[in-house]
Image (cartoon, rainbow, N blue to C red; front, side, top):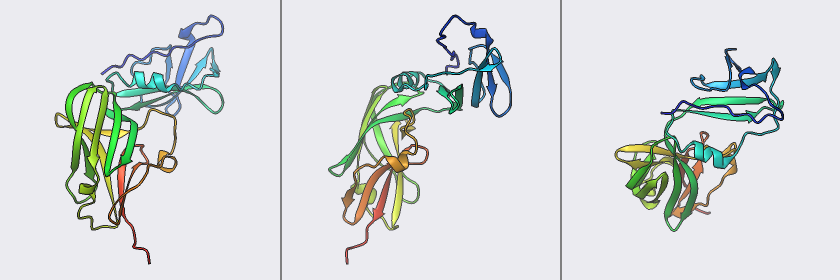
Length: 230
């Protein structure tokens, strides 16, 4: 896993990067310079020559983040601008998953496309697996990996078959060589996807089937029994 990140700063005039100091917001630990190797998880605030390092760069580029996630690594570092306009870094531990780039819910099927994030690429046949949080056995459908790219589909009828509870939740994974990678959308800057992103619903009898994003931005499916109209 790579751990060789470097902070690159474009200065309005020549400056010495060694005078940049990063301070951990919680512990107060300080690091000098722009080598980010070994930074502990958390928020780091940047200063230069003893003053907070102001920036007009929001620090977000989806294309750059997708490229960054294309390298196997066990931690992610993102630069961002605080509400006070100060350069900061957020460091968090990560595990490989599939970053969702497309979802289609139609014709009794849920189709998903995505890209491997923070893990090695795969080639060949795979499965799109729906795993119930309680009770039933997993349901899966055909999928393929082509390097970082993933595509797969799963039928919704087997998920609804025999449902006894009013509401059931299934988590979606890509499975290859016995390894399950969660499906999620975590690289963009859309907060609270669970409330903001709404996929079309399908029905199996009285059961409404709808993909949705969880609080952690993972892709899941909710199956809800609808009451008969009076």
